[in-house]
Image (cartoon, rainbow, N blue to C red; front, side, top):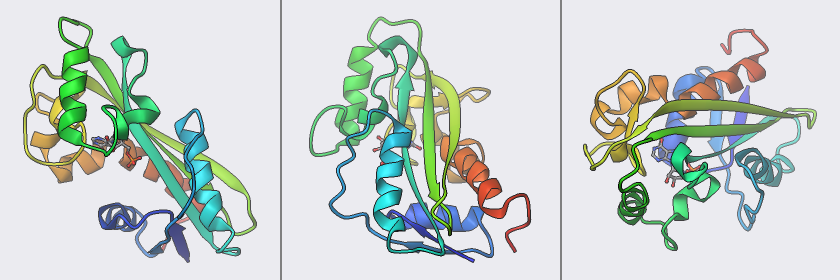
Length: 192
Ligand code: IMP
């Protein structure tokens, strides 16, 4: 079995490959698509549909993810990558997030990842994963990417950037969404 993924991000392809052993994971670029949906699922569907038309008879998938902060009404949400403007700059995004949470006691936040799938017969599925936690008052750690130096998952004392990839890849929103996606793809049967 093989699955086409709407990304050329090597890290994402490796992570998906590790969670779907025995399935060949192949990147494909959804070039030219405009991600203008109002939620993660809509944007993931836009991306997966763009590549699935080239891969009839096989599985295709795309993901969309971001950080949602309770005290900010769910922002930055679907705007996570470009929260502080273009081009994407994680340091600037984190600085803006800290500024917008200055003096705010409610630090609750969650990451969400939505994976859209198109099956061999064109059927569409959605898998979602969330990771709840809180936003720190200062950056901590060098690992990961994006908002990782500010996000402490529930049950932990360190940020995702301090915890490291091995721990993050077990509890993250992306790992949880991929586990759901795996159930859909394998329909409860082992992938190998
Ligand atoms: P994408 O869906 O992978 O493009 O992620 C969109 C944006 O959400 C990223 O640019 C990050 O700002 C943020 N984000 C998504 N997942 C994570 C994560 O695991 N850690 C930190 N930031 C993330």
